[in-house]
Length: 275
Image (tube, rainbow, N blue to C red):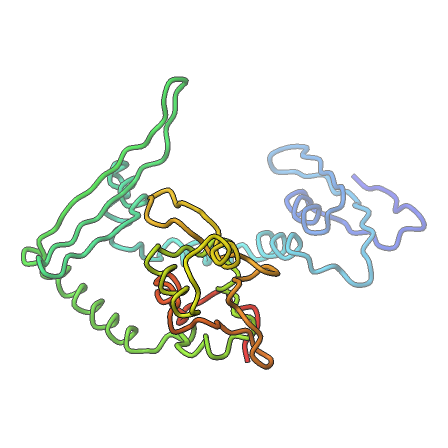
C-alpha cells in the first residue's frame, strides 16, 4: 500500500512495522503500523520532525541502547546478574526472620576482659490503638568458640589503638588562657557551698553579714539541696569577673569554688572569642 508523501515536511521515512515502535520511542514522536497478515506488513510513511541536534537526554540514551543495540542491553543484564552477593545476604535470601535480624542490628558490645561479644537488634516500631512498642533481639558470643570473630575483634582493637594515639584536634588545654571574654563566668547560676562562700569573704577581708552577702551573693537552693548560694550577676556575668587589659579575668581565682575548678577547658564550647 503506497501513500503519497505530504508536502512541507522536513523528513519522511518509510518504516516497516517492527521498526515503528523503536523510532517512536527513540524520537518521542507518534507513529503507527498496519499488520495485514502474519507475513505481510503495510508500508507507511511516518512524519518525524527531527531537530538539527538531537537532545541527548537520559530517556533518549536508554531508548537508543534498548532498541538499537539489544545485544548490548542483554550483555549488560547478564553482567549485572553475575554480581556476587555478600555472604550475609546469601544466608538471609530465603529466610525472612534472619533478614529482619540482619537489617535491624543496631548495637555491638565487646567485653574485652571476658572475651565476649553481644549484638542487639531492635525491630521496627509496631502500634495499635492501645499500645506501641518493638521487638528487641540480642545474642552473646564467647570469642573462644568463634575464632573468626575473635580475629576480627583483635584487628578492630589494634585499629582502635592507632586511632586513640592520634591527638584530638579539638582538645586545647590552654583554651582558658586564650579566652577573651571568660564566657564560662557568664552562666546565670554559678553555685557555691557555704564553706566556699565563707572562704571568699575571708579572702576579701569581709565579715559574714547581710550587707556583704547582698553585694556578692544571692540565695539559691539547688534541687539536690547541696548548695545555698549563687554568685551575683553584674552586666550579665559573675560579680567577680573583672577587666584585665583586653581580657576578662576572675578576681578571686585562688579561692574560686569547686564548680569553677572542675570546669574542663580542654573541650570548652562556651568560648566565643579566642586569642
